[in-house]
Image (cartoon, rainbow, N blue to C red; front, side, top):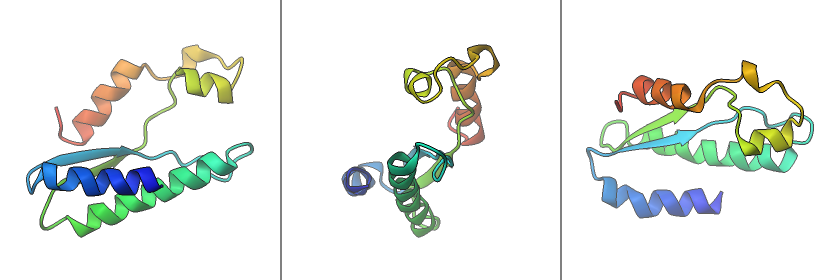
Length: 104
């Protein structure tokens, strides 16, 4: 949470009024084995949401996206043996998120 707080403080002046920031949400907090991760991710998202509403009239634009599950190394540690064929392609998911945020 502290890293996100500092990141916002450092990049906000650099982004100015017309810049854009993109954060990623992960709603798995509270699930089995996601206690510490879920709590810190929820705190990070809360900071991003606050910054988002604080800057709606002045900028920068703040986007918060929730990516579909993808076959990443981190996910493989959380879900060993999972069928990766049903997961979203990272390239396709990146394009979807950037398009939805109007960043493409």
